[in-house]
Length: 479
Image 1 (spheres, one colour):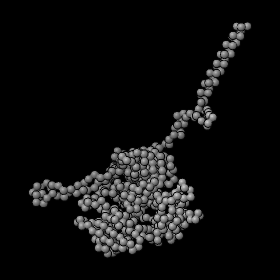
Image 2 (cartoon, one colour):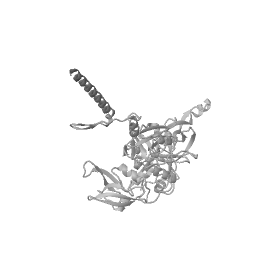
Image 3 (cartoon, one colour):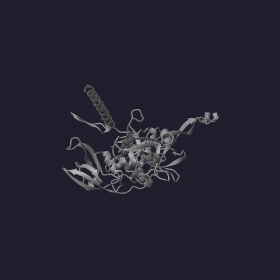
Image 4 (cartoon, helix red, strand yellow):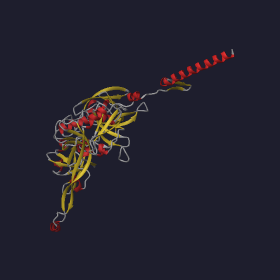
């Protein structure tokens, strides 16, 4: 009996061991489905195999990259500078002294984006602002000389044109539709090594940095912020969504060293499209204004700031529509606005005489007000010819880099074709370079227009400048 009992106990032990091993292995095989409830919270442990990682980790960016790289170009700027040197004839130099010569100087390099098959290219104004000649290298290494169609320092945009057809190009996407956290690609051609691609996410929208005020009195900014790596030579390159659509023009990096450090900023296509259309059609941008000045203040919700109307410009569109000081602006055409940058972005879509619905809060009641936008002169007309021709009776052009160097000036707009108007009455002649208006530096006709437009009727206008012979002078007249 003892032997039988021992055999039976041994058999039971072996069977129990087999069952225990089998159960343990089954538990390990299914460990990814286990969840554990702890006394102070629930902890769910989930295992992802390689297939699951591919499904949930990163979107496929290859289509967007392959589409965009062929549409981004290298932009190279050349400028002429004057130097004094030997003529090569020592006797001539002895009697007449060193001779002044123009020599080419390599300037800024950057990127650009082809937006049409017939060769229109967008880049940054700061890339080509001092250019006497602009060269463009395509991704396939072909080289072209580009024509400058127009610039807009207020938004840091410029439009170039190649005499070529059947070029690859990017189509515009909707920058308003992108969301924070969405994947984007930054595509540039900074060193003429063919286009390069970096990826990142949208970190923020409607950023205002104040950088465009360095180029223009009327800096307009509502940047898309991204952590895609963008370095200085990428200025003017493309920011595209995962469908390969253009949603921004890379413009600024925020860095103490000057190299990429995680913060890059692009001009959204809501601004870009209108600027480019105006440069094509008019050669300058048709600005539309509400006629309001804002300041931020804390609302009833102390954690949120509101756009408070601090001043209503007399005879402006907002005044005519009945908007008053103390109103709070919350939206334009059903698009919420919380910052001045967001207001600028919405208004940048429109021209004078366009109508927008402005959502305001007055006495704790929300209402919509229809406002007809006006130009900087306070009327609803589309400006023709030069941007400031209607105000001053003259046309303007950029100051060549050689003249800036000879006259030792850092800003300036050259007067040409002086006709009947304020400038002629004041005594200003063709060739005069306006360096400042009311003590504010100017670099474009739109700068002059913005400053004069901010002066009240019959207010004083002080113009400082220099003639090509070096004669420095100033003129004063009433608006």
